View 1 (tube, helix red, strand yellow):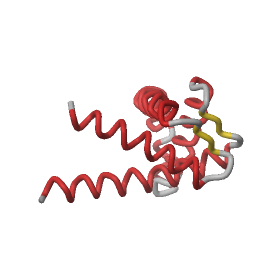
View 2 (cartoon, helix red, strand yellow):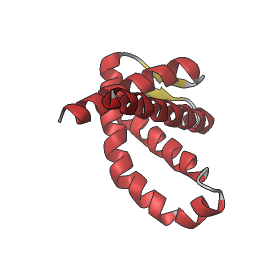
View 3 (spheres, rainbow, N blue to C red):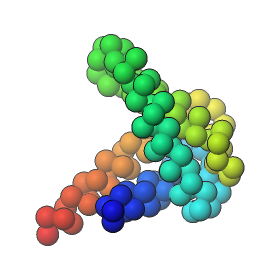
View 4 (tube, rainbow, N blue to C red):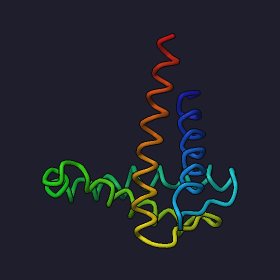
Length: 117
C-alpha cells in the first residue's frame, strides 16, 4: 500500500516537473498534479492498454517509439477531465510523455537503489 502511494506521489511530482520543462504543458498545483496522476493512471490502465494492444504491430515496427504517441494521447485525454491540467498541443503532449517516461524511469531506478541499501 505504501509503495502504491509513493508511486502516485512520484507520478504527481513528475507531472509538476514536466510542466516546468515542456512548453504548453501546464499543471496548476500539487493537488491538481495528484488528481491528474490518478486520472492518467486510470486512463492508461484502461484506454491506454487497449490502444497499446491495437497498435502493437506499429509499436514493434517503430521499436517502441509509438508508445510515446499512445501516452501523449492518454495525457491529452486526461487533461480534458482534470481542471487545472492543460496541454496546449499534441506536440506538447508528445514531449511531455517523453519527459514523463524519462522521469518515471529515473524515479524507479532511485527507488530500487534505496531498497537495496
